[in-house]
Length: 193
Image 1: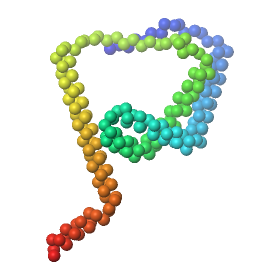
Image 2 (image 1 turned 180 degrees about the horizontal axis):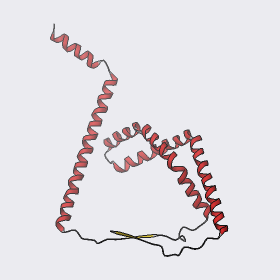
Image 3 (image 1 turned 60 degrees about the horizontal axis):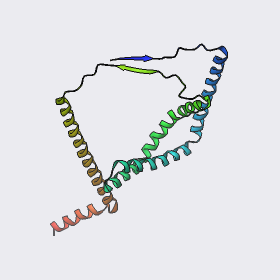
Image 4 (image 1 turned 45 degrees about the vertical axis):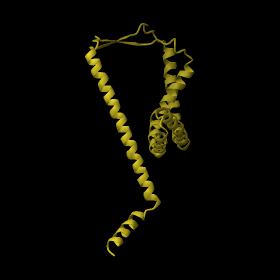
């Protein structure tokens, strides 16, 4: 497989004035990036609250879209609520690492006042020989996909049942922590009169 890149437009010569302006613009955008990092660090609590709100809305929307079964939907929503602190930590580290650069690049495109359709595009062309699959190979792949989908459904069902059983057990133990001890003592007293 060979990848060939084409750039149809020749590279124009850049005047010294434009070069100086580009250097100044790059320095100023680096300043914007540093200011955004500083803003993210100073407004950590606000950003974490924004992340929490986005997680609340996004997790419910995703679960509603993916899971149509009402009992399963409720169970997964409870699991999503419990996983929120872990998500918050991961999202905060991702935000600190990526968002200042992403926002700075986005702002740079806004102050460039260039139409994105006018910018030259590099086109990557992939050249490879295509061999069509035989009908036997297609049938085998189709059967394998169906089998894997069944396995995934089975694993999801088992996981949900196990998590539900764990939740019921934890709930029962939290309601009456002395109940297993009392029942053991009652059984022993009934055996030894």
